[in-house]
Image (cartoon, rainbow, N blue to C red):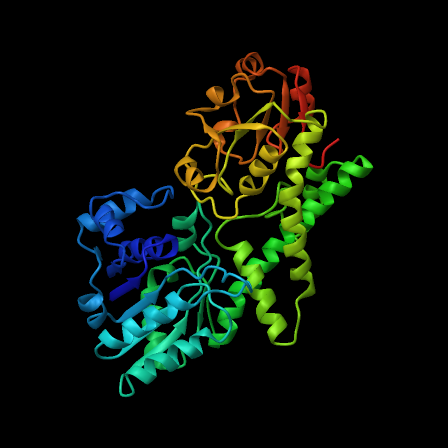
Length: 435
């Protein structure tokens, strides 16, 4: 099939590359000429394990193409995916749909013959109706269908998630031609017996928000259990294991830490709250989740300050990990963006290292000294804190770390290490929700 993808951000690029790897002919379209030029040269605008090789292979086999000119791609496409950003709108927290609607109008002006327009971007309930109305207004006689097909990709594991998903959700494929098109696009997954859930378009849009909100709530729940564990002398990791073995609950997203961040959970929970409020059906659990998570990220700086004796003025704090999770360079809403400025406001000097996130962090953090590696980062520091659980932080040379630090103080906000082992190594060790 001939596929066009509007937007070469995280979702668009991963989806386009994977569809091409399924055997479809895919053209990714973006207005950013420099990004398209870099992609044509084989340079990825994001860090995602395996993506560079996947793109290179499918470009070489002429199944994947990049362009700034949508005309040819759109007029010949069987399906066009809208995969543009939907950031939180300033002032009210709603999803900003301006890029989605601009893409819809661009598609309307260029499509020829029957076309399935697929919303891949995360959009509030009812957006597909508006996309359809805008296309119909510009092209009253056009033959097309608007389908919702939300993505469920985890940064750092996106390619596997696309190719081996728990399910594929398709909303609004009432037209038999649209349903056949979506089945053909995802036909390779039939071999894995992947469930494809066909539903109403509005239901599909809500499924995406409901899934992310539930996972965000699960993270926030275990973080509150971590606070309670600290207060009563329990171990949150054992609590998480004890409840996670219940298959009604499950073990995923039960790792206590400094709060959730990233490109999805913060904006999607906020957008769902706003949608629910306007619909007169407030989601109070999600409202509480948003508030608790925001407060948690801010409180983590105080945890570090308390561990350092209640005062970090004039001290150097070494920060390992800046991105919101490992295996990505994504800094959006990362806990580091709250923790580091709060430490600086308390008088600390911050030196930081991240395997992939430094370039992004430089644009978002001020007056931070960026190190080239973990040992350079801790040299002469008065305390070390782990904010992101990158694999390379899981097997540090602790003799070298101890010799480099002014004070053997480690604040591990990801619970990578065992408290008893760190004490045996001679460290003052502070973690999350563990005695």
